[in-house]
Image 1 (cartoon, rainbow, N blue to C red):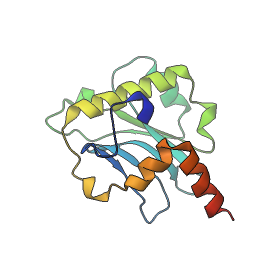
Image 2 (image 1 turned 135 degrees about the vertical axis):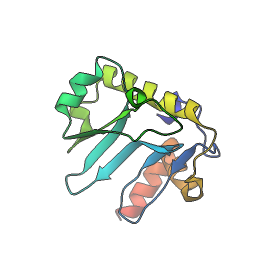
Image 3 (image 1 turned 30 degrees about the vertical axis):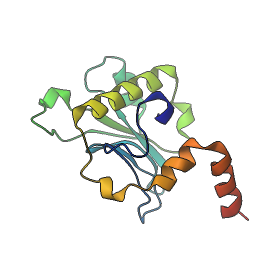
Length: 144
């Protein structure tokens, strides 16, 4: 997602945090766009757009689904979906899913200029996601 968008670590719309619940949520403005390691099932949740026909396929296959609350006078029909998949999300994340997910992320990027949760942003999480050498070093150290 980071390589496909304009989001940088210092972008006020982006929040990559390390909550106490051992998840790695990625928030754009007010909404989670990616939330791995949810619950005991190791669920990964994604944002998907509101009104695109091919979304229905992924809604049917989701282990958890729902609509985000309306914000900024958003029409109810424009509220994006969140979908969660237990276990390894690779079973569902095909090219069409990625296209839909990224289109929902782009919509969130355009929705506002900054996240009210920005104070929780951890630049180290961004660096770990973007820098493969650094990420490998972190993993080596974590599993010594």
